[in-house]
Amino acid sequence: MASSLLLILAAASTVDLVTAISQNDLFGKLSLLLLAGLSIYSFTIIFQKAIALRAAKGANRSFQKLVEEDGTWDTLFAASKKYAGSPVARLLKETYVECRLENWFESRADIPLDTRLEIANNTVQGILNRTLTAEEERLMDRLNVLAMITTLAPLIGLFGTVWGVLAAFQAIGAEGGASISALAPGISTALVTTIFGLFAAIPALVAYNYFLREIRQISTQMEAFSHDLENAVRKQLLRDGGKRT
Image (cartoon, rainbow, N blue to C red; front, side, top):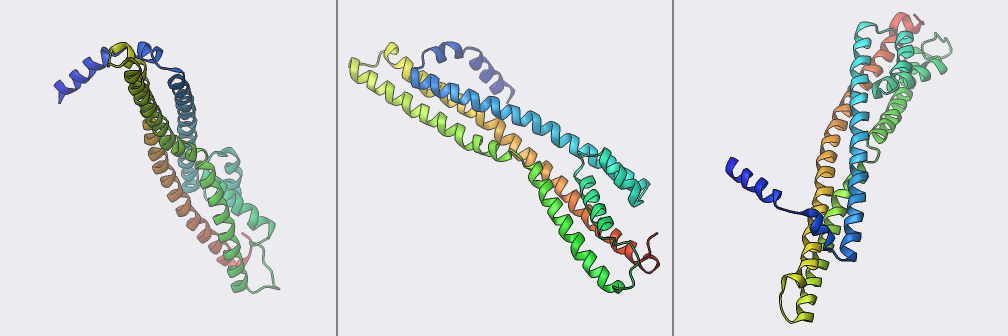
């Protein structure tokens, strides 16, 4: 295994990409320029998304730790403003605002407690589902671009490969022989566009799958926290016959 890796590295060290790129025809160079642009855009998204997801996970951990230490509604609502990057903090913030605006925790003689429990539960579920969906969409932002690059880049590379092979065959036909000088531009186009296509696609594919796994973990945290919030609202309404504490 080690000897095979050394052979690959030794072979790679003999490749002169600059010369190979310079031997490309106009279409090959345009393909490489497009693939380079896709690669730069892909790495920009990867860098920004990695920072955003890391910040979201860190904010979630900090906020949930605060929930365990001090579970009062007012304190957690105030803290949710500090942890604006936390999806679970946004869930609590939206639930708190709904409960306060509709006065779910106020005693009301005109509506039986059982009815209030049912209405409040349905309303809170709707708020949580809407917020959870919005947070997942925010976390998934631009992942579709990475998915597109994983599909588009190899196709551009393949198209460049076919173009290069076609150019090589045409050169053979024009000169009546397979001289190196005649084949070099076409072969360079074929091979280099393939390399650049894979270089753009592979990091985007790896990052897409990694980010998708991270987002699923955050979504699982949000769903669990949503159930906890529903139970907290229910307990608050039941406490003291629905009187505000």
